[in-house]
Length: 227
Image (cartoon, rainbow, N blue to C red; front, side, top):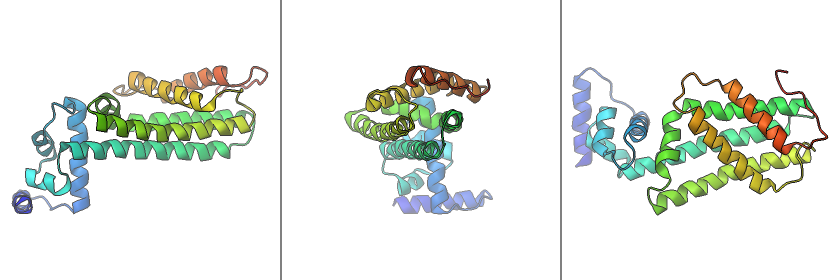
């Protein structure tokens, strides 16, 4: 039944002069629309009707790809953490090959900018995860916490690299990783998401200086980037 309705909708689209989308592109269209709807209306207020209207498709087409709004919401949460984790993994690899001295600071700063850029370029997805996913229900919260721990582990490994390079004071790197990640997300939500004129370089400089003052041994002096 759903397939028939979807076919009818596609035929209507074609009669309006548009081309029928490949399945992958259609699924992506639904995800993009859902991301906007959830960010604007919130998960509880959003309905499948809102998503299909935003995507310009029939309900049958929606159900070809997702079983419910919950299903598409979970897909968006997974998408966010997959992209974020990829950035963190690349950052760790970049830091590992950074060499010594002030080159480490330059890479550290660039890594912060890369994290900021990911969230700047995905404001709705970021809002969906941190303003909607947490606290909706036990299953959602558990999944977000599980994925957060994965991201936290990447930051922990990055701190261990800094420790091995001798530029990190003795500390509980696992605890500090949680502090660094948590404070970074707070800065992103308060000073980046929804701020079209946000200066990534300035944010990165402030965060880097804060981290250096807190984490680098006092006997080590660095010239901060831009000085």
